[in-house]
Length: 482
Image (cartoon, rainbow, N blue to C red; front, side):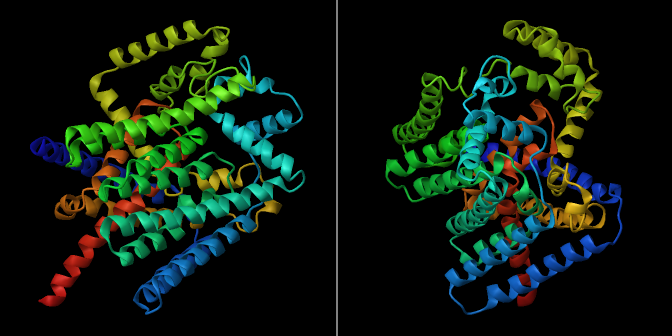
């Protein structure tokens, strides 16, 4: 098994090096595609970034307690995110607007949006967000949007704390944890999505808490209930953003390839995580159906999931949403079986009739486009449908360019970390994040492309960048010794 795991790690790391180089080139190139003006937004972002780096360095070197250090970073993150929320009076738009409207209908006694061929019934993975919005609209009839933004702010800061704890646990180094927290405090997607009413803002903290519990349970060989909590918290996150199956698969692969327990113990750990995860998902879905709130299971609606893959294979649209594929369900009168069959036929035709070189180029382009935008369109979704007079400072052009530059630096550090094989082997938990990046990278190749879809796992680059920081610090220390 040791030879297999080493060989797999070599293959995985090599593949990630190649893919990240491509994504990095596209990220640098994206800076030059932005209509760049060194305007007030650029000055603001540059000022906040430089202040964060300078003050962060001073903070790390200071003699105050570690708890006070992380507290100061979290407070700084709150200030940055609060300023962002005050800058734009963001409103629900696109799918988020549909969910927000459905929430009002639901608390008014109408649950038709969960039945038949209504939008939420077609895509029931949005159900929990509708229920959450309904709850917030019921509790806060007037200022519910402000309340939801406040929740986003709290959960966003929690994400930084969890990243700090994960890094500290892996490296047994609080300074490295501080580096990660400082980066997370200004990492573009984690800031710009604070005012967006998306499911990821609720899901991400639960994903990260699950990963932290997994590392604790496996690394310290804790009792089975830690791994059970790992599955439960991941399931809660999955209820809001249903892409956690990739994490489950990564857990299973990590346990099989990189843990040293006996086979019986590996099987037990896998079953504990899988059972606790599946139990929560099935129970919540079943209760909603028994109460006749929803018609379909949360993971399967009235529209087959293969339509998402169909959009992802459309060469003309670059694998993004397009009216041609989106019209297929209505074209066949929402007949599930016919839609599934027709979608499969079109996918097979596209994959078998497109020249291999053209197909290869399509998927390479699709991969780099998924990861090349520094804010993952967070500025766009924040400012969309907001009147200009309700935006204090617009962040197009210069501001977006500086955000892109921050993202590029983090990507470079992540790439450098991939060459730190000694640290990767020394801290095997790092391989879990390589598995996750590979898993989500593959998923995004298969499914519909949208910049915002990568937001759910954008924190991967923060964690992997710390491995790059470790490489640079050790190289710097060696030069000093000379």
